[in-house]
Image 1 (cartoon, rainbow, N blue to C red):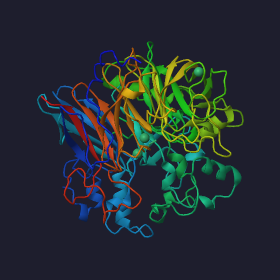
Image 2 (image 1 turned 180 degrees about the horizontal axis):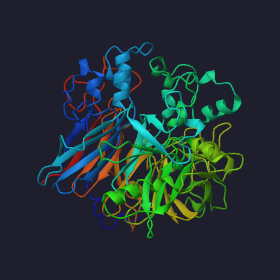
Image 3 (image 1 turned 30 degrees about the vertical axis):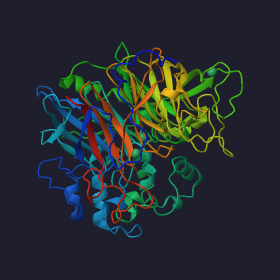
Image 4 (image 1 turned 180 degrees about the vertical axis):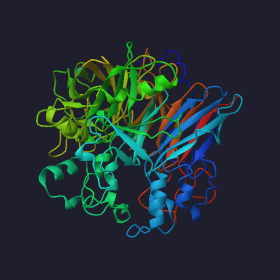
Length: 595
Ligand code: FEO
Ligand code: CA
Ligand code: CA
Ligand code: CA
């Protein structure tokens, strides 16, 4: 069990108990402060936030809505200064506008929502030994929104599948949507996953031709009007008028935050799906491996292995080289096989060999040459089709249907790779895939964390389930073999991060145990492997995301505090972070040890 051995460095705080507070609750001996919140100025000239009189022009210069991924990059030559890069995943109009009429949004609300999506780059400044960070108007500060021009690279760039009336070249896309999690690259850029992009497009039902309709359906693009009704303001969101516009979203995007004038990139060589994120591992010879999960019930785990090598350093030549690393190489999808001879019955009971574990294979789908041309490795699909309809390529090769792969991230200390499989309420239900050894519970409400020992640039791996999440008092949970009476309950793992000692940190979204979402530290090695301690909780209705774990501070994004089916701006149920009768605002928070 290991509970009688000394606590592990970094996982030695007093665990925060489950709760339903309208607050960020942190361990004793720590302090916290908001770093930046929705509406705070990001670029020079941005007005102060005015909830009741918000404009699109203001929003385009202010911090966007629903912060998800966060990355912190030190600014060379400026002590204690960093670029904070944050994704703004989506907008929640009823929480943003008093009197919002979902049947008849206004043009100004549409324009504000477009501007509230995308990413923010903002310089932040530390103070002495405190973990506190304060935004500053630095030269790199930038807003990327739903109308910023992106350049498309990889085998689908210029393809007929990406051409629209506004962009007959199929290489220039306005905006990025639903950027969920992400990753920092060793060459100083930021990757971000375009996730639930299906929700922005209306009138999919106008498409009746079988192949086209199947492609839309496989990505969840269905029905008549969209919830936001953006198609009534701009025809690019109307599939009846611009059937290819959805094919221009669902990619891994790369932003070079050190060049505020640069066009961000959409990398089609990594395929198109509901990318949660992409995270990088570099092998000894400089080969770059990008791991990415497709966050959908029964969807797949992918990796991309570059053919070009990373150039070390931060100079212009290195950046030029490294910005092309994700444009040539091979895209793979994963199959996993359990090693237990006994049947997996869907209850979560450990198999007779004592572990949910087995082997896996990476099946190649698409090879992209250094000239940017793709070669399909999937029968019946062209290279462009594999790049754009990647889910269907995964279907054809029999990839393993997973319980919603969220963050998929290598541990920089050990090289092992971890996947948060957040939940899958449909596992084992009628007509759906039954439990298997990697997804061992039917109607899986609490999710699991998968550990891979991957031959990074190669095609094989071994795997085991580190955590089978839930209430540790329940028999269907597993905490790496650690004493379950000594761990925090954890449900719906979403984002992953690592501290400098190699401990795993997990943030949650959708806690199914009747308490708030939070952030947990998990021991990976030694006798305390599997020990899970809750470090903080976020306000009720909020999701914990974007964790950044450094020796100086822990940072999280608090996304959609107070979100619920009936919360509106007219009747908010959260007043975090400003208290009183204020509106809730998605915000980034820093937590540090008291002096
Ligand atoms: Fe936006 Fe998969 O979470
Ligand atoms: Ca989210
Ligand atoms: Ca086993
Ligand atoms: Ca997520």
